[in-house]
Length: 439
Image (cartoon, rainbow, N blue to C red; front, side, top):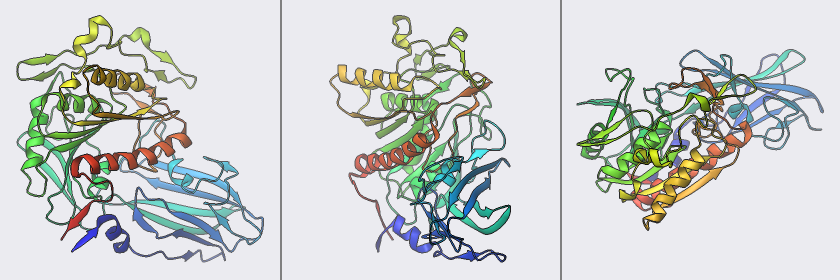
């Protein structure tokens, strides 16, 4: 029986309910449910307050590294004694104005420069939300936010050299397959893969170093490893045979461009804030070697908070002496979606995307599209993930700025995630609407 996966998830998660704090008449409600998908918006409202009463709302969670993330906002109740985050503005806190999801995207870590870590995306994240006034707690509620809808399967992968985590939708399929490549620094990141599996894709979150028995550090990358990952994914009976997609960001994006240029069975590439050249490490494939684009410490700058600005750290890949490092993406037969943050301080991803598209255009190719977000930073994640404006850069070993204004960055994450799904539906299955699963 055919059904929409997302609709299934909504019906299967428990319905909305109200919880009243024992010492207050105030009621805090999360609608349509206290349990839902991580990338879906909720409505938060308070009732039972005194008209014009000022109330403080606070959200907090503890991630898998024990870091606490917190957001705060001050509201004034209306004449009915109600606060509705979709209608009423925050007067102060970690965000201001009418922001229905502000208590989620504006969260800040108690350990500076931390990024929210979720190692196992088969379990939910719990956001604890509290309303208080004059030091008295009025109401509490917990929002349980899932990365997987009911029936999605998570399986660790240790096949030959391949290491990672596989997420598959319920049912036999076949479904479109996607490889998810994350940033420099090693390991894997599961949330994107889990959410895409909930939309009807089989997704392999692929590690390429610094994970389990993979090398802790690398001196070079072998494209054969990624070729093996494609073969592994396409051997699975629940995966379609008409070519896979690759979702990538940062270092993973340049690896994705290289995969598209030299490897078969790739139909669609999403490149989020990547580089058009091979960076830092030699890239090997059979008898070919693409040398690395190098950097100059002279190009490092310091921002006002004392963070390093590495945006212009790398040499220009289009300079004559560096052209050998540029990835020959004109060889690729797949479709490209370049997602660009114009305030990316990790590197000049807008310039790199422009050069990649110019190279395609010069070779008569029209198999690309670009979406650009002014004032968004490097780490464009799934919707409502807290903004990560700074952190330890694995190539520099110091705290650097990643850029982005929180509100604009949050809006960009919502829009980009919608575009990524639409792109993969169109070019992996030929659909513009939700993917269908048959059980």
